[in-house]
Image 1 (tube, rainbow, N blue to C red):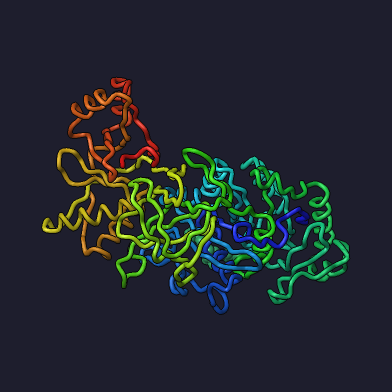
Image 2 (cartoon, rainbow, N blue to C red; image 1 turned 90 degrees about the horizontal axis):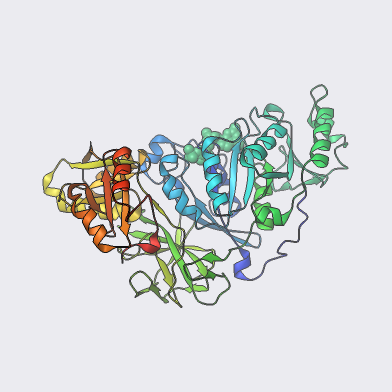
Length: 537
Ligand SMILES: Nc1nc2c(ncn2[C@@H]2O[C@H](COP(=O)(O)OP(=O)(O)OP(=O)(O)O)[C@@H](O)[C@H]2O)c(=O)[nH]1
């Protein structure tokens, strides 16, 4: 439906110009391709022609790692900033593979909206659904892009129906495909009497038609009866589906839907224009004491990701921080709430597709990289004003535990350092057993183990293997009574470990034995999500 809305008309102030969003999708739906096309619009990358095969195409930030190239999947989260029209877009990339879900969940704490990419032949897939649920929990509004219309696709009504039914989300199609697969010839703007043709130059824009009855559609849909069948569809869509409603969208009850083909760079402009028009600017962020509004003058922000060694030539370590309020100026000092110490933001960075640059200033909604040597951790809050801690960057109890086996015993110290680094980055969780035995690493998905192994080898020259551990589950333990906690820890010596923050972790051999302990120690809390606000300083 035509997006006739009371939108932010020509946003002028820096905060309302910002659009900070992520793309969520099932692997292979076209997230990487769409990302590249969006960046092309923003002028962030100059890539002539079609996207090259993943194996040999120009590397974007989203596939800098060997393992990703080998397997053809996006592994790491990163941010890409670009300008388009009046808006500054911060696109946060999320790994599609479910083994990296922790990373994705953390990233979704830092966005204000999300684009859900759906493969037109497949509809809603498992991973899309899961990620959607995370967005819903956080009330993140969703814009839908139904991709790969240039291939055989399912009926548009069937796809919309599936979104409505499986996600309990109202749909408001903005465009409607004209044919699919070999017959795909463009999109029609519902209610707008305008057409975007596949065979026109991308910058040709939309052309006006008299309506669905325009003879142009007989030219485009030449198969017997196709044009009339299409007209009926459009009539049904215009008459029967919900109109776009900005409030319902912003509250997460309704999604505007665009049809297109990322590969053919088609429909992408409609999508980006739609984001500029209706996606929300930075929203207030929940902190422990109060909600922090983006327009407040004092700078605040939280770290949702740490990435080290992005550039193999520099052993650098970057903390990605979402600015939540105020203005970040290069050179300013901010307080790290966890330690109470000031840190100097002397070289904050913006990331573009293949480049980065020093950020002289950044506003709420922006994501800046802060180079540091281990001072900053995931979940940290930086503030220029009062002490507060932003909520919502969780850590999940791992589902797989492995003991690290180092083939060269001389390198034990180096391994400890490397694991500390990898743990702080969130690649894996690291638990140091109280009995002094070799570290145990915990992951949510098995691929994280492969990433760790490859990175230890490539970045630290440490060849490692994994041994199965006798433990299969772990939980953070705490208690209101220190004595009770001590009693528990003392009587479970070899099953106790500490995480990187020094918080006690209980490891159990089976879920059954965990339940048994939970019943035996009612005064002890066993938690599977670690809240960063409560961690030890
Ligand atoms: N025909 C067609 N193919 C597409 C389109 N968009 C993407 N593809 C292809 O679909 C495959 C997957 O696309 P990607 O962009 O790598 O998908 P992804 O969702 O990023 O996948 P992960 O990296 O695994 O998360 C690639 O071979 C693309 O060339 C499209 O609009 N039409």
